Length: 112
Length: 112
Image (cartoon, rainbow over all chains, first blue to last red; front, side):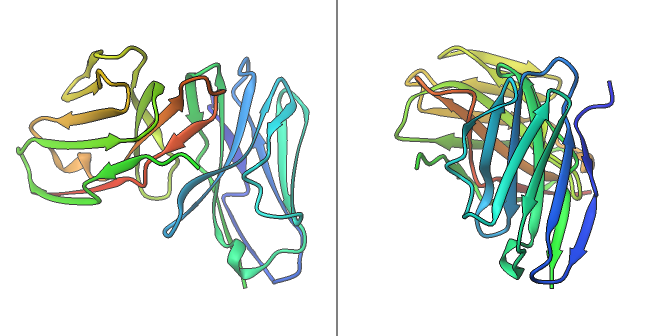
């Protein structure tokens, strides 16, 4: 089992550019979660999907953030336009119920 | 939103010492999870607790789900240098979905 796979591992972009983060959940998991981690705020849930359907997006900071899950094996988190305050580590996690709630290695985003 | 109060925020101990950390909340939780995060990686699940009063061990780690369902603790016995990292508690709220609430973490440093 390859675990939850995220790409890229690191992303440096200029303010105003579009950023797309990618996630491949563990096969058989039916829930997928996007988190943001910063020193100040810790781990924050942005959005989660169940069976590819967005269930709760109340953590999405603003309209610049959007997430999709077109199928059971792929999800994207997009920021457009990006701002320096979006700099953080973004994690994707997947689970089957609460069983095996597993995180990816994260994408470290720096917006300059 | 719901808060998990995790303490202590950081710990500096000598190799071989035992460690204890805990999380408390004013809300009732159905499930408690404990994670460890190494630098540059995502959190890794250590122990999951599903019943009030449950005491579960994983090697040198022991965790308990509080009777009131509002707290949990994690103990590490005979610490070793590789125990260094940030430990997070996470809880699934009673009546909630698969969404987890995370504590702010306990940063553990072990001096050889």
